[in-house]
Each structure stands twice: as C-alpha cells, then as structure tokens.
Image 1 (cartoon, rainbow, N blue to C red):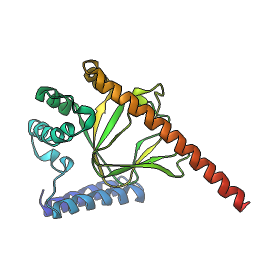
Image 2 (image 1 turned 180 degrees about the vertical axis):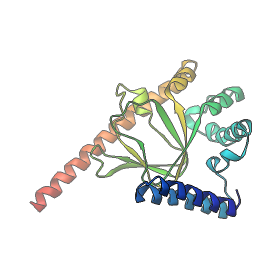
Image 3 (image 1 turned 30 degrees about the vertical axis):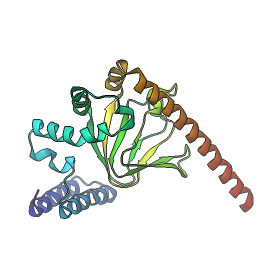
Image 4 (image 1 turned 90 degrees about the vertical axis):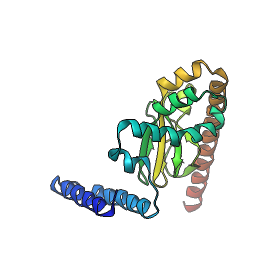
Length: 219
C-alpha cells in the first residue's frame, strides 16, 4: 500500500466519519490506527491487516498459515502436534484481530467463547475493579483460556490492549474438537488455567487489601 493511497484512504474515511457526525473520540482513534499503519509502512513491515484487502482469500489464508506455523510449532502447549496437516488445520481456524491501545479485548463477566494468542504487542490483565494491573502478557503468550477450561464459564478479568496488538483468536468449539484427540494438551490447558485463576484472585485480593490500607491512612 503506497503512501499516497494510504493518505487518500485516511482522508476518505475521515470525511465519511465527519459526515456521519461521529464523536471526536472516534475520529481520534481512527487517526491513531492510521498513524500505526504509516509507521509500519515506514519500517517496511506488513501486518496481515494492512494487506488483507489487497490479496485473494487463498493468498491471505496461505500468509496466515506461514505466520501462524512457527508461532504454533514453538508454542509449548502445541508442541505435541507434529502433523503438518493438524498445524495447517489449526492455522486455518485462527481468526486475525487487531486492537488499538486501550481497547477492551475481554470484558469481565462476559461468557468465554474464544481464547487469544498474542502475535505482536502486549495486553494488560486488570483487577475486578479495573483499578490496577494484575499481569502484562506479551508476544508469544495467550489469554482467555480460564473461562474455557475451568468451571468459571464467564471471564474473571477484563483484558485491555497495552499497545497496538495483533492477535490470533481460536474459537472454543474448534479448540475442544482439537483437544478430543490430544488429552495431554487439554490437561496442560486445564492446569495452567487453574493456576492462573488462583494467581489472579490472589493478586486481586492483595491489591484490594493495599487499597484499603491506603484509604485508612488518608482517612
């Protein structure tokens, strides 16, 4: 995507949004997104999002597989999936998503229907009150699995993008289909989900106690 084409796209979208009388907040977010695309172009980097509309669906699927394959192969929980066909099948089911900084990716108490793998960027796991950060997850990590693999079918924490984020999203229904033939991977997910849930709850209680102590001191 050439610079002049990109700037034309920016102006077209901005004009459309202005005519639709959207809020200044939405306009600002749009400008942040296009600034991100310009920076990618200047660095000769190409995200899947920037080229998605300029190639055929088959080519996009192939690029998605090429990007997902090393990610999946090096991912500990998928290390037992040696079959190239299985890896391709998973890659084909991965949905690509991009988030701006401060976007809510997961909201507390929502029903969990998918989990997320971080391709680029970082995300912030928030306390239940959303007044502090429990954990920062970066490239190569995943989240959203707790609601899929524990009795807590709803999200126990909100997750917000800490930067521009590129994610792969895997649907719960397809994930369960994969795990039917790989009980060891399912066991790893379940144990890690239980560990994370306990860790997040412990940190949430610690933050709550700290906040109460601060309130007592200022009272």
